[in-house]
Image 1 (cartoon, rainbow, N blue to C red):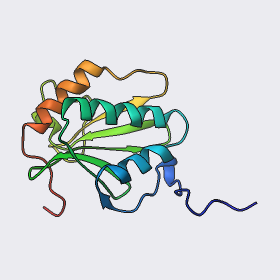
Image 2: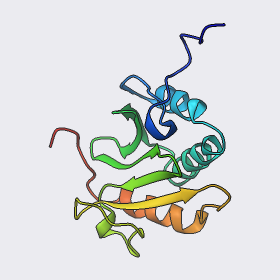
Image 3: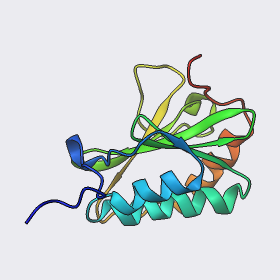
Image 4: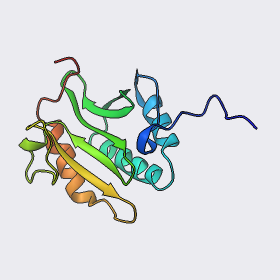
Length: 141
């Protein structure tokens, strides 16, 4: 029996390989391809972002769903690792409080979401609203 050629390849850590594209459809394809418990985390992230910012720009670039403000750049992205879903706030150092995990980039802060540990929806939503209010990251800059 052969693999379904339409099914995305899972890269290291179970990160789905999705072609670069703008819009909700590639983000939903990425989320649908997330393995196991990580899919529910991706669905929750997407739902919280959309609830906090109904007019959100979405894209998948570099096998990472990205969320931003039209004309202002991206403020958040996430991807699968072996043990957790890694959420990047690209200007996270400007958020109050800062997301808990540092980065090589002094502007970026991470939130690691593990199996069986719920997202703090109130804090996540506060970060999304703060991040959307400041200039985001523009690829290529």
